[in-house]
Length: 492
Image (cartoon, rainbow, N blue to C red):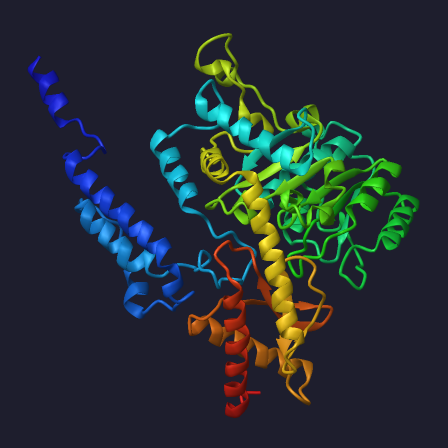
């Protein structure tokens, strides 16, 4: 008995020794978090970390305990003070969401509850399925379709393209492998398609020769006639055209493929129709612009990102598949330890049967809470707002002789550059890159850059519910100011 008491006396836990102290610190952290969001406009969009902060992240593995208040102090000084900046109203670099406080609370509560969303009979599993049902409704998918919440667009596209491969392979790929596919499969997408599709083809064992990049028209949409010719050529050459990938918002410019035409062509050719809607699928809920993605509801599978235009904290992607059986059959494995039971905890649906992860985080709660708080119609209006803001910025650029639009503005991505009289393309790239870096380093705005059909340009992706038109006025003014400084300095 004494040895048992001694053993119990030495047992440890990660729970705090004093819950009152942790409660007080937690209130302080929440207060700081509210201030972080409330005052975001007063801070630089981004700033470089000083040497001492970088050195902090080289500290060795901790062996001894520290007070949690001290730990939080280190986080506040060295992490919270140097964010990427994507929640800032003038962050327009890459196509990201800007988060929301309610979603952050949802992430916190999900972590506190600690449920594994691999499946099972518990409330979080039902909420996960409910959120997928809501997303299906947003894009016009039938209730009988299936879906799964994943980390983001890259994984959502991999899920959809895996189902497409298996459905069109002509053999049981799961049993026999890709080497048993009788004819090499071809997947088709525009030359503007996101790079994650190449990764998907490689991961699926098809290789980078499987996707055929189709030229785009003047608006940077896939050329449907060129696509038809490519399909005919490939059939003649012994390939099996398997899947058309339509893009609802390209990452470079936001161009929207003609989804209705692609759906019709895929049906005629007996091909899978997948839509990469990570940028623009949710335009379907925007009252003024929903028609831009007409035809998305005809897809066999869709990839979309709630952490973009639903402003959910990272990570939150979703893959939707029209044929629920094809979806489950592409991933389901049922070992004895994961068999369902007629009652009890294991009597719920096994959500891991629809993707690659057996362990899944409770992503649904942050989506659910924000949708319940604001309603889907408000998110639709915010999408319309961002598209209107992009058109406003495009009009400012067109009105300014020193600036030029490089491609048409379709939705919420504006591509432009500063003119320099007599400069070569190489010099223009150097000049505009310097503008971009100075805007970042001065904390004014975060832009990215890209090259489209051989022309380098700056890229403003407006997917932020905090952006205002006066932020765009400021961007143009500061771009012109810095442009004059760079010209005076003779840096090209």
